[in-house]
Length: 523
Image (cartoon, rainbow, N blue to C red; front, side):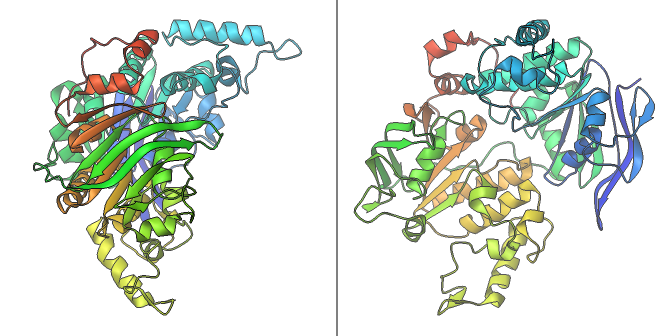
């Protein structure tokens, strides 16, 4: 009998059907992967299983008995826990304090010693290897994720839903997570695993449910399928497994960065003396775990953050805010020929209450294409937007609705459509495929290569090491604000770069990383 079962689930939002008679079943002791394009209905379905939304039709069953959740608390009390992609931890608290928060042991006051004992026992039982007294803010990302897992186990969850759990992990941390998932399965926990990464599906799952346009289009046994078959079911067509990338025609340096130092919002030095050159006609990939100075580097280059010292020039033009007599602004950087896909689309890339059409011209309002004498020609704006929406497959294909009404993946497509439609000297793409399905990600990869081949200098910042390896002509590895090494394409592999991303051999030894562990199945 399944631990959890969805039977003919229907969920509508107005005239839009997000889930159309979706059924799945997951058993104790197995790992079920749920895959599908953006807008396929994965998140909607998981939100119903975890009590955030309620089905319009169909039912959810646990151990064969129909259940209804009035809230996420109801689902938690029934034994369903969700490990979110973006961690919900309090950095200044310890591991134990985060895990027991809301369910604290007490002897009249908070019993810290008992909390630490319980967490230590729980972490040992599942092989999670955490120090209960360690402050969360001092832990690497992979260990913070273990804290999230411990939280839902402490609540008594028998069914664990993981939403894109490897988004911010190194290859080594990903392998360690998969060991944890397998250990949980041996303890008869039910695991539902949502991911866009097909090699991860192949590496860790037992079964696969494929959703497309709100319907189940495939139920597969992992050992009997292939990444190509899964991808074809997801997008309804054959998807190329690799990016077609002709040899680069590398030109002169477009951007020259020398001894660049930049501080974080906390006043700590986040970029420590970086030297880089980015040439026309090449993609320079920055590989690193998030939080190692990539954000501050990109913000300095785009005029959003002042540098403390050093220089960055775009064909002799100063890019750095606050590092010259006349401070460079983000608008001046854009005018100089820099296009920018920010890592945080909601904060930096869009004005969510604005329509899709208006978001597609952000930063371009003064262009003669759209205005005259400071007055926008809304007919031209709408015409421009109607051309971009189908090309970038923005769903729903409307230009008059607020960007905030779109899914995360489709919001990303709006940003990409705007920035890729220009002809910049430098294109900075920070996490450009975050939240995108395999078909949309392939489209983005093709456009990045097109920009490179047109002579644009492309700076690609990505937490997806596969993406860096597939697209980059040169790769710079960043760790704690320093460049650990620069390689030409083909000179290094996933293991070598992943090791540098964690600080090198000494760091790997400290964390007991098995450098001889086999690589994941390639997608």
